[in-house]
Length: 221
Image 1 (cartoon, one colour):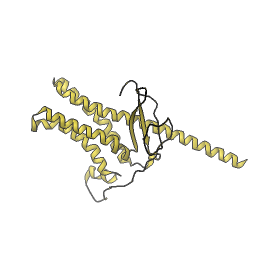
Image 2: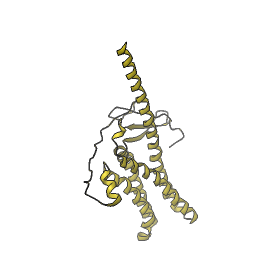
Image 3: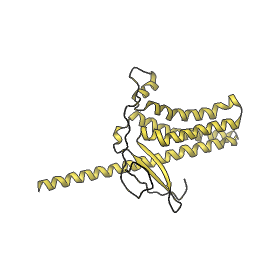
Image 4: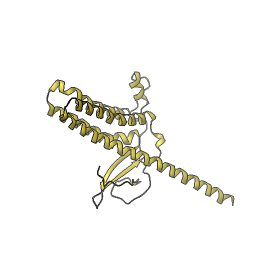
């Protein structure tokens, strides 16, 4: 993310996502509710309960599983292979898969948000966001799982980076740096998108109240 990034965020309601002019509308896209849910009798323990209450258990598993797989590869793969290059490639590949999944799949299905960037003609980068109009249809479990994992992931990588510094294992800091760049980009982007969504919803609610009040006064006059 460069210093030339635009601070203004935009919402669109076109189904296609071309380079479009500025707007302040919220896009609504269809998200199937309850798809792939587990039966109440399936699973057990805390994980089983979470999956049963999730609207998209498969997506939730990938969302968390890829993060854990990348950390496990970083910590444990060296004991089996003893090869830094292979361990580096596997870990970074898992981080890249996690970045793509969060950006394009789990964010859209679990919290109804998605982001991307465009490069303007003057070379500056513009953030583009889209969100569901009715955010209340999102599963509470999905939302909590999404945000908690997004916040905890960079914290864990920062901790691993500190361990590398104390052990003078500076080559491993490269892996930590890649992890922090990818996870931090997703976290910042979704935080901006969520904040803009909340502001947009407040604006729509205020507008709806004003419209209702104006309609009432017109009808009573």
